[in-house]
Image: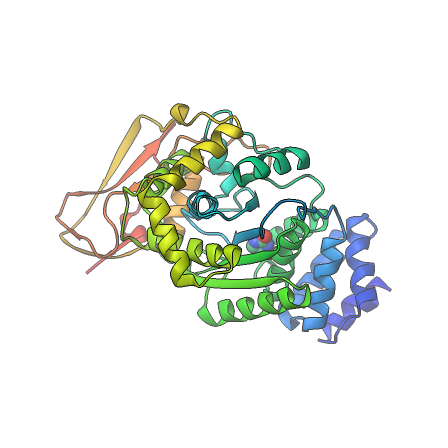
Length: 408
Ligand code: URA
């Protein structure tokens, strides 16, 4: 039976709900072997899935665990997801902005995968910050202050945890229907009324081309329609790291600067404003233009930053205790010119080598290490000028500047 299902997909045929249920639940229960599931996943990567198969798989994923219900909380609950990137700290900025504008946000975030960082790792760099709130604690906090960012509860879409781990080691992550059902099942199981997805495209992202990103966007919108959830998407660049820092504590400090209005007019701030405006528009059911005015206002009057402080205090974090390593190494420009490109993947690998994310499940993250980009794409530099600062703990990895920077 299992072999028939794998063979059917290998031949590019459509699987029924029952067939998908048999093999995926069989895998979750340990009755289907890793090698059989890997073969099916590879056949899906190569032959794709119809919308009906993708909707069915999304349901099988959702039904594998708890389905949270926040319908007792006031307001429309808008959730946000990013397909992952280097230096992506947008959640830390936009959730407090949306809450300060009067929206309600229940956000369950994940850990880093490979070279891409995770919001939960970043938040854990705030000493004391609790990422393990119970459903009751989440309800209470959202009721009191309108926002929460916490880790996923243990039993949320357990199917995704096991299938994702296998996809990660069998080169089957980059499949549009598998990515869409993985993300959408988690968002729906989390109780979101409306969802915004930031689809990253570029060498530091899962999705490498705009065409693929468009396909993913359209599929997630169709899954949303099927499940009666409004889904909006933003497609954003991930060839260059997002913002000026990569590394957990450094990124929290950068997010605070953006919330305090100290950083303006860079692509990261622009993306935060775009995403926050869409979320406020969805949450308050107002036009995006009006939402954007509110977003700029709550940054200007610091109410977004105060929401962030309220959330951190409510989750027992101590912002005054965030630490960045005091050991620094400067990368200097090898030539005079204008920075044409900063390779996101190369920066991701460098920060990974510094110890900012896990290689194995049991590894410990060093929250204090990372990279600060002193100069950004488009900046003119002199020969020998500091273009980036590395914050390290043990030793600085070998750095090939030509792999990171392109000048013109
Ligand atoms: N993020 C997810 O949660 N799932 C995927 O499959 C890819 C990115």
